[in-house]
Image (cartoon, rainbow, N blue to C red; front, side, top):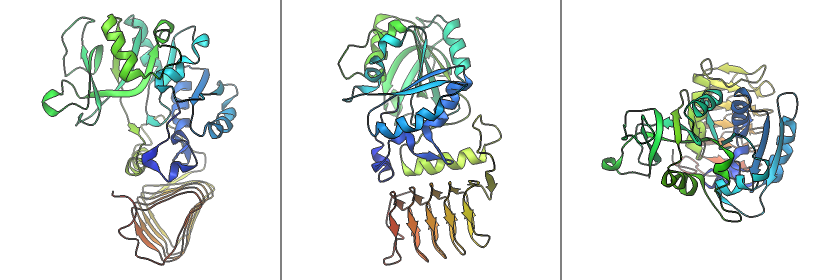
Length: 347
């Protein structure tokens, strides 16, 4: 599912869908694809709406020995379940459905095994959080008709609750955006109607008494939906690179907590700390970066000092600019004409 516009990531998403935003120099969507292939999935269809032509150009390169892949473009927004329902004629066996705008260490094979062993019609990946109040929580029980046990990280789904108050939180596990469904579940989605998995389909399955299972994942999970989450995701992936299943690009360097693409240019007399320098991006002499993201082809000129900034592809920060929390769109220039210390986003 790759229809997200990523409104909180603007201006980065002004010219690209959220799943095409770069993380460690690769589109977010590629991390989801990797999890699918590692789990044995060999036929991938990307459902999309906003800026779908960019996704189509990217996804065609996935085709090869590991999988076949294509994009299915919706003409009007149909919701998460509605967009998948457009493919109903092709869903003839168990299907794995993932959100294309999150980075997570999904073990798809383990989730498929849990799905089969428990005779489930739908299985959901979960993520454990300290504060569940901003999320939709899931209540689990050890049996299909059992009582909810808030300590469980795996079990049968018994209840959902959106954005619970502290006194309403019966668990701290949330929907992580990956589902395994049987064809008869997708057949319940009405044709031609905007319909969501979490708001519409899964509550209906509970009402019908169909078995739904869930299992919490280990490792990492990020909904890369805001600039601060994008920076945090990249820092975590760098720090935990040796324990996570995500491959780094061949020739990439990890220095001072930073990821430097093999085709990037970083001057030896610059300082780059906990940052990402993408493909063909460049950092000039005397520049200082801390917790920044430089996407493909972006440029930081001599003496610039940046803290928690994000540069979209081909953006330029001019010489001696000092900035904090600024997000530049594609090809934008940040000049040294005003004090930018308080501009941009609030980190």
